[in-house]
Length: 89
Image 1: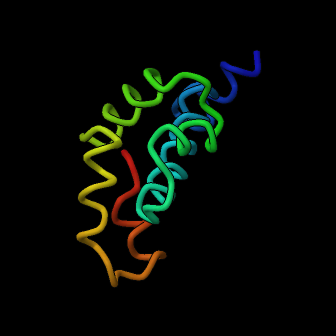
Image 2: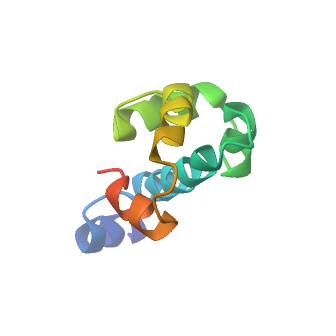
């Protein structure tokens, strides 16, 4: 019942919503650059690096390791703007 009501209200399942929020948090941690991809995976609450990487790639378009390398190119951009521009769809 909860899942159906949640999907009706938000347009996605509770699991999908949770994973999207975890990926958003992971993106912020990867932009910081002080944690490895594995550390970020476990920090955001994922228990499988493979599942995390697959879902990250689906939502963001690039694997977490690539995102981490290229996120340094956005140095100097305020975090509030970076968060809005890089939000997964």
